[in-house]
Every structure is written in C-alpha cells, then in structure tokens.
Length: 193
Image (tube, rainbow, N blue to C red; front, side, top):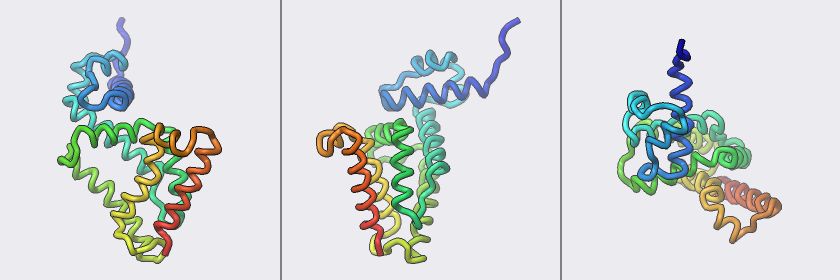
C-alpha cells in the first residue's frame, strides 16, 4: 500500500522551496522544475496549488510580508525598539528583503500582482504611525507614509547591501553594533517632535 498523501505538507514544502528559489534567483531566474525537485513534488501540483510562476512569487511574498507584519508591528511609542526588532527580523529572515529587491528589479514602478492587498498592508502601518503623530509621540513634520518609507529604508538598507555596509562601516560585530546604534539614533531624530 502506498504512502498517504498530505496536500498541506506538500504545499508547505513547495512554499519553502519557492521562497529559497525566488530569493536566490528572482522571478525571471527561478525555475519551477528546481522548486519541484527541492519540494519533492511534481510541477503539475505547483501549478494546481499556486498558479503560474508570477502568481507563486506573489503568494510567497504576500505570506512573508504578512509574517513580518504579525511578528514586528510598528510601534510609534517605541520607534527605536521597533527598529531593533525590524533589524533582528531581517537578520533572521534575509529572504524577505531579497524577495522585495527582486520584485523591484522585475516590476519597477509597474503595478504589482495583488497590489491592493499590499496597499492595505501598508495602510495599516501608516495608520499606526499617523496615530502616533496625532498623539504627539512622533513628529508630524513629515507625512506618515513618507516617514514609514524613510524608517524602513533606514533599518533595511544594511541587510540589503551587506557588502556596502562592510566596506563603509566594517564587518566585525562592534562595527555592526555601532551602526545599529546609529540607525536607531537617526530614527529617533527623524521622528522626534
């Protein structure tokens, strides 16, 4: 008698293999056959469960962004703590920033698949920052959406371009610690009333 099929386990293996493949190769460079081989699934199941390659990428990125939003909600009352948690998250999950970077290279400023979901995701973060502005804990000199963009760029850039970080700042633990302190200080000044 053959092994019992577990569609959810198969979907999970496909998802994890797709995360790794897309983070490594982007949308254009990713190959469904490599995802299938890594996931120990056939290509037809990938298409049946997730659609085409672009749709699979959109689903992967959407789920990864949701995980980040749940794990590291923006906290206007503790911007420096939020920056710490965001930097820790990306150090532990470097694939998310790689996926976002690939998405930017592939789509540029064109509309994204599932963009309305992404807009809702960011609207919640902007609303949290705007609430902090309304309560006077964060400056309102910069519009909330712009402020969110600046803060995430500040926190994320060190993980996106590690080679630049190493060349400019140094690659040792004390260098990374000093840079983190500088990023938090810059975030504090950017948001100060």
